Length: 274
Image (cartoon, rainbow, N blue to C red; front, side, top):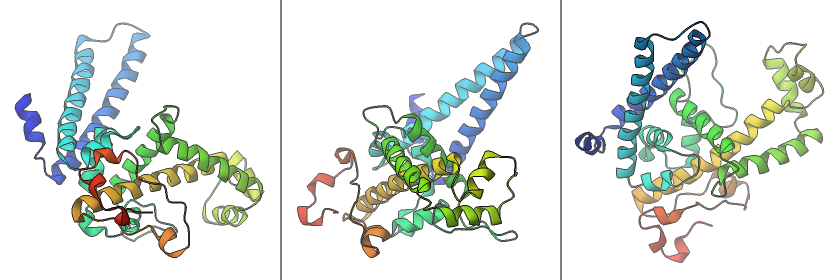
């Protein structure tokens, strides 16, 4: 209802995180119900009760999505997130509820919190060093970028494919030999698999290259999320990412769709990020 959509604008971050989790749980239930319906249909008509359950699950899923969309649209960064191809209300709500810009003065803090920092490990018996739910959201965002890459409005999916082509060239040139050797030592990989064959030759298998390229696109996206949230909180450009600030990298990808960021265009030219 209209009243509930209005109330959704004031959801707490904890409530949003719960609803995001519930949405994906309902989605899994709906998919499982649909598969069961198809199996039952092979031998007869599904019970009306079963059909009703499947329909009600779909309705609840849609209503949660509407509530979260109301929350996102009411957030200063929400319209910008929703303007990005591949990013819908569920992922947007999850990111806004999990990322606290007060605790992330640099984008590297978000990388670490999302489990995307380089050389980040989780040893047995230790507390997980990242937020598992945020890491899943980032994975879902990456998959969405890949699926939407054919659209003219897409940005991050195209970055994925550009990066993947580069990774393939580097892989063929043997650049990842040390990485491949390290994977063979650290993980138990079946010797009859294509992955083992690739690692044994000092190369990364296609799945590994896919993950690397997708992670690159997601990290660029998170860099942009950080820049927007930082600006909305403090009214000035965010500190540049570590590779640009300390390693001499100059190829910074600008934040897209800044027309959707309140006040972004009013900044003095000299304060614009490079």
